[in-house]
Image (cartoon, rainbow, N blue to C red; front, side, top):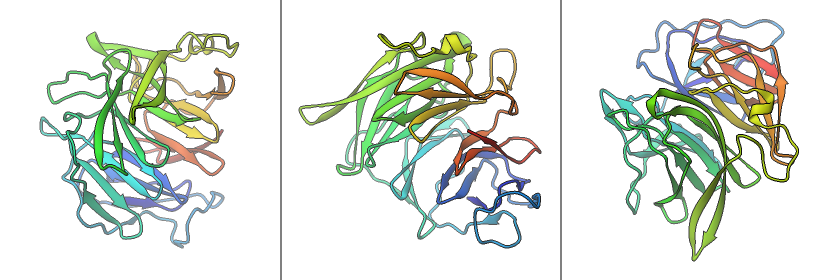
Length: 310
């Protein structure tokens, strides 16, 4: 785990596999185990987000770390980060881990029920402060999944809660207004998708389930611009996150190029409408998320950390 403390600085020498943001700090989980060489740089005018004076990346000493992997997915539930799955050397993991920020410690979570099958390149999202939802992904043989599973902290148990429209990996998800939104991914036969789905939770007889509807062409009885109206191209391995009440989509790979396009797209659940939040950013296949007043982007090349207003 690496902690980034200066907007505008770069971390070099580690291939990043996933990231998350909490308390103004960025934590990235490297795919490679080595942390050398480590160097950083930053402009004098960038915004400070921590107290470290040397404007550099600082390794975080952790304990109990899971085995090395990539393609895992996680989300923040209150003050704890939950991490599921991933792949290494042809093996798809089905284990659940937590990361505690106060102690910088990882912990394996032994659950009291059957777990989702091993997978990687899936999506994960937090819901209502105690529910961790895993969506889609692919197994060690490369077969895509369409199932949705939810882990509830109060019961320490997994349950299958629904299905999306088509098996997909490299998809992304975000929660807003109590619903889960799912965008894109690689579907069977190598089809890169711009499918947009709204998955609404319901509790019947004490059991949680999701009903997913395809709203790529817009929502019934709503006049907001659809995915097709705005022209969001098909993509996978992109970023999707909630900022305020809205959902944002950025980056990823497309069928013809690793870099999809330079635009940042915003979906407003209140009007069920899409718009372009930023039309001239950078077409990178990096990891993005919200930080204070802008988009955080940790790119997968030498451009390092970039920001864009939302």
